[in-house]
Amino acid sequence: MEDKLRLPDRALQIQLLEVGSGTGLHNWLHEKTVPYTIIAQAVTGSYEVNSPGGSTRVTGDEAFLAAADTPLAIRHLAEPGAPRMTFRYLHVQFYLYEAIDVFSLFALPPKTDAAVGAWLAEWIGELVRLAAEPPGIPVLTERKAIAYRILSTLLAISSPAPGSKLLLHGDNELLTPIAAFIRERMAGPLAIADMLERFPISRTALFKLFHRYFALTPMEYWKTVRLHEAYRRICATSDTFSSIAERYGFANLQHFSREYKRQFQQTPGETRKKNRLWLSGGEES
Image (cartoon, rainbow, N blue to C red; front, side, top):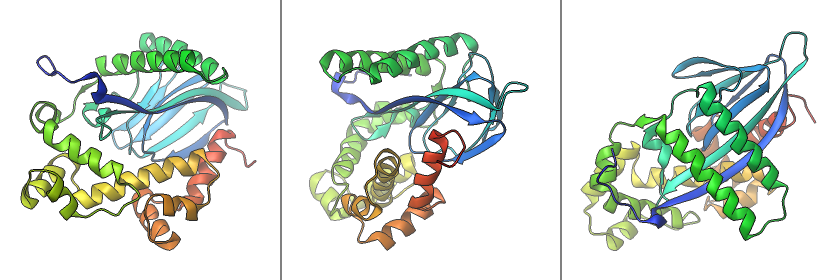
């Protein structure tokens, strides 16, 4: 697909690289929809993953893969006679021009084979080790090198998503700077007039462009970006929901909570509780 495409090095960024491991009670069902790509492996036991694409059983060295915004029902299955299964995971986001998720351009398979899974197990293990090291340039360099090896491996087993070729070869030069401009203004204010003033595009063409690639209006895209960033902050920090709402430009907590529930089918409080429950292995802490 990209045989003649030339992107500058700065076009590709790592937005998220979160690694960890844990345990899950046998037969525990964890349901979630998250704004990042998931790579997860059962170290002992297995997974049963249900998504809109169907049901997938993941065993041995295999890894299950799920792109951002995929509704998932993940069942944790221990080995016979064991109370728990154990797992390792990696949450990642790779973006073009800080605007477009790479895995919105490529369709991931629901799982890897054992050979690819074995490579992922080694790399995730290295990332876990590096997470315990004192931060610095050498550690950051190693983390990024591993992340890009993972990306290259996943792209090799993925297929182009519908419309991705046109975006990469045709509308890339117009859409990506507009989307990046929107992301830079997550705290607002932002209006359609700001985009029309900044970029050489008509209002009609602007709306057609965003509908073609995101099935959203430009302002709906802006709201979605802010909610996705808020989701990550709810999971990764102990910030109050009011401060998160303010950080991402929502008028008040009530407005934020209403839009958040519409996007993720759960409240901010439910997201934080479910994330902590998942990290604790299916038991209330």
